[in-house]
Image 1 (cartoon, rainbow, N blue to C red):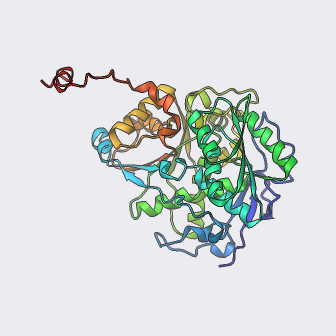
Image 2: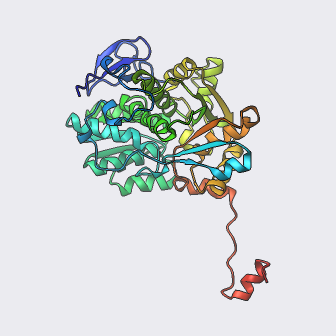
Image 3: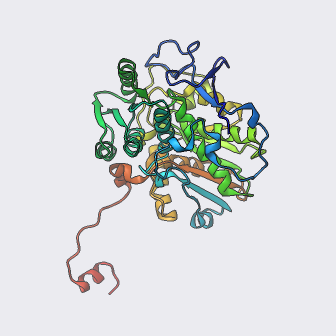
Length: 407
């Protein structure tokens, strides 16, 4: 199959050939300002010859719809994550279709592997062996792990406040970690300066078009796994907006191909303490002085780098976005763990917290899919806030039975 994929600028609509040195539209991007989202974000476009080439629910190979040949990807099991019907939750809440798309089963435990997988293959295609990334943790550990499988070197710019588990992951995979005295946005900008100076490939989310392209694969999987069941709603956790944009792009690509003939209602969910995209979506405010504060570190960003593109995409499909508190996020995390057996990280739980918040407004007979983007083991410290560590028991059965009130 000929791969006549191209890039298209989200701002001006110009089309470009895919090139290793082209990350943002040269006409729209200007100089990156750390107090503003990225302009000139590029997205991969399917060849025109692919339009209408498939039928609804027809079998497909996702690698046919990616701009990199399959043999260039690392031999690591990325994607094909489970879509779990949460029977206990359905019974408890009185809803017929609750489905959890759990990406914590990816090799490094997060949704970010989908993007890193494609970035790694892109680097190999262009004979690049060094990759740079800025991250609060998941993208960094993801790129480090995927690159380790591919024999590539990774340089990580990470806020010094990133969860220790994610730092340890990066170091275990052999990445060179550069902790930054500052937030994610500062790490992001320093990584761009570093890759610009060295000529290494930058994996930064939204900046590198392959990140959005990799994340679209989740949409293809969801529809394939749901089969003939209609998807009425998809709830997506939102930080910088690239997961949201990727899910929407996947749906748009499937419409283009003919694999589906409708768009589910997409609802993005942000933490109240990290509401940059929410404010931009409803109030058209791109606040250059915004400061985020939420325990859901994976969706905590001051200036959402993909705000322009994700807001445009969400409005185009008439989606919505809502806010949840940190308490609602922690409650949802504990509820999901107890009722489904899935221990997801707080950022993932935000998506389900959004549903809980508005469920009285939603039909009980509809099908709901929730993007659970990472494992709870990524941030044990935050999860510990909702559990009580028990005191030790005397090693004697009668004492144990008495304390349990089972004697």
